[in-house]
Length: 409
Image 1 (cartoon, rainbow, N blue to C red):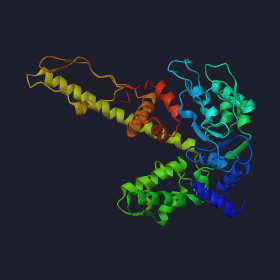
Image 2 (tube, helix red, strand yellow):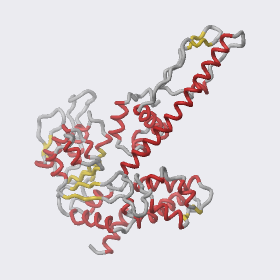
Image 3 (cartoon, rainbow, N blue to C red):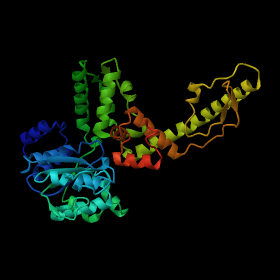
Image 4 (cartoon, rainbow, N blue to C red):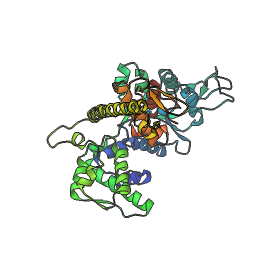
């Protein structure tokens, strides 16, 4: 593949960078495009895996037919079979009409299964049959239908580990992984980091009609040394934050450092192997737990002070005490609070002391999820991206932690 051809592909799909690992991934996509072989795109979350199925489709003989991208992690387990393979009228509650699935709609084209590692085992069996024979059945139907679809899948999970744990079928893995395509993480594209940052900063400046930010040498060195656990998605987020918040358009290392969480754990040291993304994540969790445990002591002290104050006021003949909404708002919902009896004159009688409660890991996870949902106006897809998990994983965790619609309204 010539340099001009490679450049044309990058310009067409808006891909920025010139590192060898990135160029190799693009070349693999171009070479496999004219075939009908299944491709498995692997790479960490946020590296841009979604571009490669588009390249494969655009340079294939199927380019004039449909291209359908499906986020398997965003579809609830109970409806995934219906979404992929369709259903017949009356096959389940709510099936008021027959419906085509994605494999039927994409006949003659390409279907991209993102986060394929999140598929339930029962759906994996159906998918394996499509890959082997091109046959499928709608939910609630006994009629076998045929489809001619090219499948490109992607995952950020370790599928071999999932196979060992019984969460993914080995035969399906080898069907999908006919041609493996690995997308490098951002930390392995050191020469591209600054180019990408400039592009994102320039986009923000153009969109909001403001001068673009510029990094000095120290800030650029820090940017390129950072581990970037969230990859390109995290880099774009940082560029947008700095562009919007900072008044100065000249960004120093000290300014940039404020936007890079846990830098001391994420930056690779010279001569060292550096931490993996999983180690960074574990360190961040440990720091968060420590902060929350320290806060618990302060909150308990505040609760005891309030209890004593309320007791003192109700035992004297002073003016009745009105419960403070601001102070009550400081008490965590998971804590056991004292029972208060309200008389006709709205005086408050504290009947029981406020017991202390240990903050558990589940409490911390629950609070993290609720805060992420609140920051994104309860859009689960955006909250899942912030938490670096799939939407299906977020759904499962919410269910396990007892987070329902009442909590997120």
